Length: 144
Image (tube, rainbow, N blue to C red; front, side, top):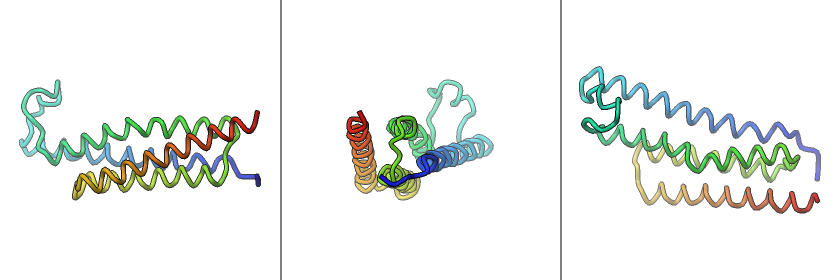
């Protein structure tokens, strides 16, 4: 295996952070705007059970929540790759592929929201994550 700068595996993590931060900012701006226009009562956000968010805002909220579900496994996988010294161009490529698919998933979710297309991208990102974790396991076992 050729020498790879192990820090290269961390850049996709920063990209995922910025996706999450961007969706959070979009959600915050949308919520503040809706409360300011009185399309959503501010009391709704106390317990999320007084009234209802408009559908376009629920999509943003749902997308934000989604960025804390399966991506957690991505973060852990990258950290394990880094600390076990298993960084390779293959793993870096897998990490970037995962991130690209998550950006595409969020874009689709927040725009057209075509469920079948979004689902296919979601499955694709899950497959990349499975490949990443499986590759990591194989490399750790080889290193014994």
